[in-house]
Length: 215
Ligand SMILES: Cc1cc2nc3c(=O)[nH]c(=O)nc-3n(C[C@H](O)[C@H](O)[C@H](O)COP(=O)(O)O)c2cc1C
Image (cartoon, rainbow, N blue to C red; front, side, top):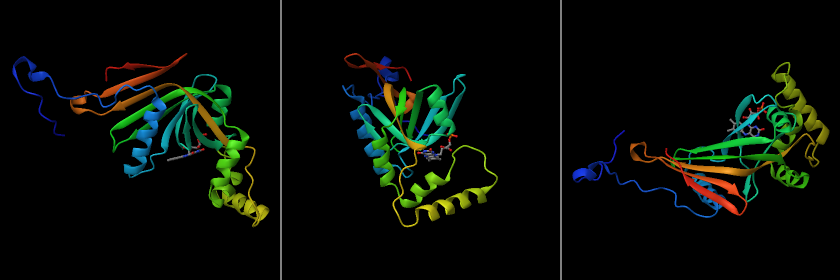
């Protein structure tokens, strides 16, 4: 990959013109929201997709993709089955990390913090916004448990369709949201010569402390 030429001139020949991509600002959630909106405009794939890392009570890690369905000052929200492996991890050890990568922006964002279940009313609102097929499949899947074969899933889906007919589909009590309350957010931007920009926000009593990290 071609690199831009370093600024020239005497002993400053090695000084490259690579300004920080992220200006220090007070609120990392606002910075995240701007980048997220931009990623949703320009990424060819789903910019809400994010790697979610959890660990069980023995600190054994696991990671998988989820979709980010909301971001506010007090949390990053995703939805899942409360019987799933990730949910079991979170019940045993309510800490998690998220890692977004938006290649079109050359940006990675890492978020870490404590996780709690989303309120029942918040989960209801989101569940009712889902397409009907997704509402029905939430009932049909005992996520992350073993099944005899794909037919089992399809039969389960058919039984759920029969059960609810044309009527409304309520949220199953075994399905809902989690909210990760950020303690640490790190923004990374790709820069020439691998002189990448990293800006770390750590939650402190009065707000957020910022630190630049070597790449
Ligand atoms: C792009 C993408 C998005 C996904 N979004 C979700 C999601 O929002 N919620 C979810 O439960 N699983 C989602 N999945 C499936 C999970 O990655 C995972 O397979 C499933 O939740 C079971 O994980 P677990 O056994 O660790 O609980 C998604 C998978 C992909 C590839």
